Length: 431
Ligand code: UDX
Image (tube, rainbow, N blue to C red; front, side):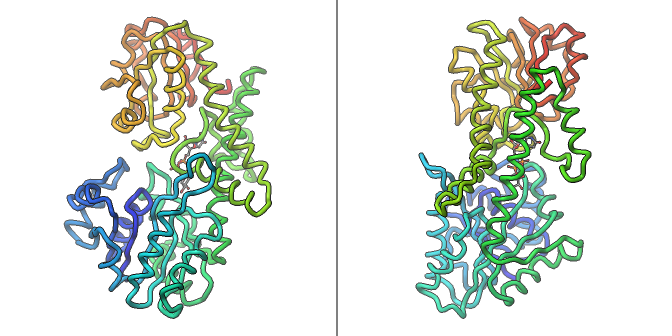
């Protein structure tokens, strides 16, 4: 099967490289020539464990993966075209901006040469895939194409494994022919007994938003429970464990912290509620989750400021929205670091991978080459992102570098008693 993937962002590139790993011939398309040149030389434009190796393997050795700059010359042989362009939140509104999706649909409609499937893989509000069908139908006879919704559930930092060993594959179609083609495409996973769920197009689109919103709800819920734990002297980690053992609840996504961030959850939660509102449905729980998560930035920033002296210098460890990625989009660490900076605090930062992106987003943050350098002369350490290299810091060494021994362990990666014994004032989340 020949696959064409339009958009070499996170989802598009991981999808392309992993389908090449399954043995399909894949062409990835992007209008950004600088990005394409980098990709052609085998360099992944973002940090994702395993991606450089996978790109090198399929660009240079198997030659199953290639890149091109236009849809026009690349649809002649395509059996399946994936739309994986970005769907950012519209400025000043909460809904997803679908202009890139419509643009690709137009281009596809002008260039289809033979029957193919057009698959929406970007996270798109319910109704979008049908709209793509309408746009293409304006120029192409229905017998030459079908549309499918096939949302992607991969997580940054473990994207390759998530793609190759997913919990499930969801295929939303409106006819048996396209369902059969999609089942054939995912046959390598079916052999590994991955559940393949075939639904209507609308159901598939909702499954994606409902899944992300539900996970975000779990996080916002445990974060509010953490606030209560702090006041009454309970320990949220033990509460989460006590809850999670109940199989109906499950232990995943119950880690309390500074709130959820990244390129998906904040955007998807808003877009889900906004789509529902247009249909006169009030997703009040989802709206509350969004507000709770947004309020958390000020709540935590104020807590930090209240415990340190005016005009202090603090150390901020971890700037990416979670470990194993260089992505700082909607990162709670970046937001908290920026908020305390605006209140007159000098912020000395270190992140293993995200410093280039962090600098682009906020040039006021002072960046250092290691956690230890960032601790020099500082009055408090804030652990914003739980990178492995922050889990066993040498506090003997750090104690000599700090002016005052205060630690805000926002992700609860340390045992408070251990640090208290070393003379630290310790503040975790929810304990
Ligand atoms: C998410 C979904 O998990 C994935 O299925 C979807 O395809 C894209 O969005 P991702 O954004 O990569 O993936 O990150 P994820 O691991 O889900 O974490 C999202 C945010 O929630 C991070 O900021 C993380 O720190 C936070 N989080 C996660 C918590 O605060 N507590 C938790 O228990 C879990």
